[in-house]
Image (cartoon, rainbow over all chains, first blue to last red; front, side):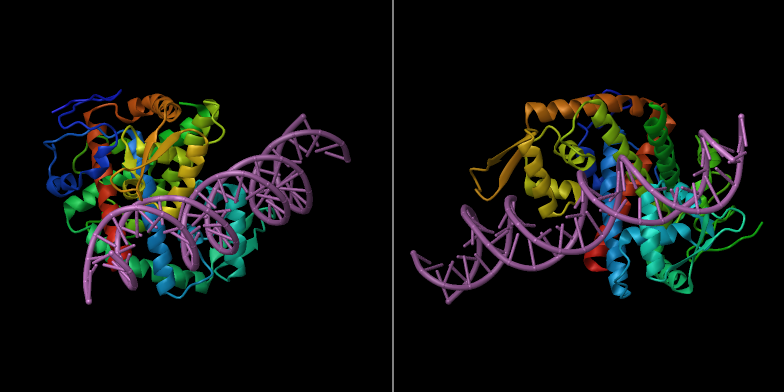
Length: 190
Length: 190
DNA sequence: TAACTTACTTCAAATTTTGAAGTAAACTTG
DNA sequence: CAAGTTTACTTCAAAATTTGAAGTAAGTTA
């Protein structure tokens, strides 16, 4: 078996050239529950990035489908993500920016559409009249509730047992770490 | 402590309402190396989806920055991802579609730009003249190599020890699972 | 109170994605 | 083998998303 080490290759048994790793579905199935996988594979940040891109695409189209089913025509997946990001709290545009690492003008644009569609309310804060306070309207909450409801099925499939839960959590934390590393790098250089 | 159970909430100690989970950086730091985290948090697929969206955004802007540094002006982050997806093998457009769950017309569009920019070569397959064979040119390989090179620093930061590697791998596999679940759902309904 | 900063909005342009329609080659079937 | 079908991909226009520069109004500071 050819062992082609990557720059940062460590602990390689079944090696990959940086691209084929995406095609190892059997690992996913076989490894459930293992702590020390027999075939350790090096995952580079590019592979993760490509995976993240794919998964993101999938989720967006899932959202679109779900919304079509619900008969919602005036909200795209991106706006739906904004609604989900708002959730059931009242917050300012700035807080929302932090929640999703959005760009200001982008959120402004979406908020305008969502406000026009009646999904959110914006009220100027009394304290600071520059700051807009955002919250979901009844309609917006209903849409989120419907999405959440539809999402229940996925959660049941994804989180079948303790092991799944643990893995989901590790995935979440690891992504958070990627977020920090990539985010800081973007600001300060690595 | 208020315990607000989610639809699919299981094994909750420190509960969250589906939104605040994104703001637990201390967990990431504290848990490195723990197998059975003390504060188990339920991660729903929406939270993961939002995290994925954010991380994806971050990576795209990182790519953009990296490319600007390299002085590459005619390739956006999306096209760069396509180049990375092609890698060092020769493949057909169809295979490329599978690699990234792209939409055909989209890839066609990017391949045209990349071919115009001299980053890829397309040759019609002899076997099947409908099928285009794609591969990176010297220039394309150079760009990928540069990106990979720049990526080395991130890999070193992200994969410091065995625990990191394990977590990255679990994240990768879990994302792959999300990919399958969300993808199948999109095609066949859950 | 003048200058600066913050919080957000607007608008135009660029980029990315979608969807419908088209083309040519390969396959299938009567 | 001719006609119809499917596959593999391309093209084009329109829509959706994202960016970036410039603007506005309110708060802050010197």
